[in-house]
Length: 255
Ligand code: GCO
Image (cartoon, rainbow, N blue to C red; front, side):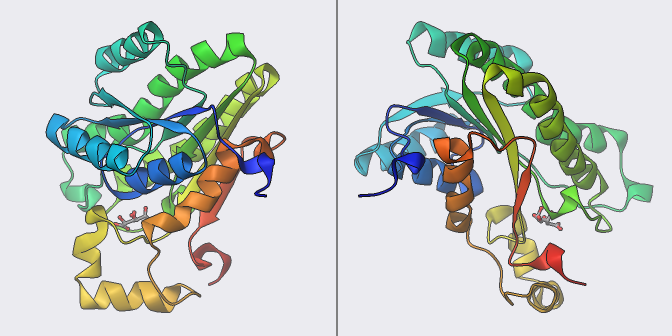
């Protein structure tokens, strides 16, 4: 008998950016732990395809098609879920983009786009979720950080700053919302095999660096975030708040 602490039956999880990549893997993992999932993406075709595949696997899936940088659309999506009687018990703020360019060449517009997508959206969507969790006296928020929540890498400054902000936003959420029965934590993925990182995987020098720099000597797989996601989404983490769990093959633990 699996431990009920990790059972998400009866819970609904909204995962932003879950048509593919890390978000899709976490949505599937949360569904396998019993949750109904609300998939989110900005591309209606990709979102519908992902939802169809997951429904075909017997999972309960709602769709919320909106761009996380569009505050009005995000608010409207929550109002639609309210109207459908879908209460978000678990929010995974996963949506994010990468933009690699040295700061000296970086346009401010590109800086702002990354900050808006990777950080501000987590605040906006977190606030909308918390406004509904607080009256219920419970809720789980899982923000997706990065190794760059701790360490900088040249050419990814806006991503680094945004992910550093994710770590501190998580603590700010804990500071204000823990008293209302909400647990806000984060996951910091290491170098994972995702579309966003394909250019790095395909670069022999970067690939070799990741494998040498990571004690596990390999890239991570998206499904390897599921354990941390289920833990932080479940009763097993009811006294955990403001923390970030690194799923990075040990990279941050060593020089
Ligand atoms: C990069 C990568 C990283 C990883 C991940 C590491 O360009 O260095 O995209 O940012 O995606 O965030 O935790």
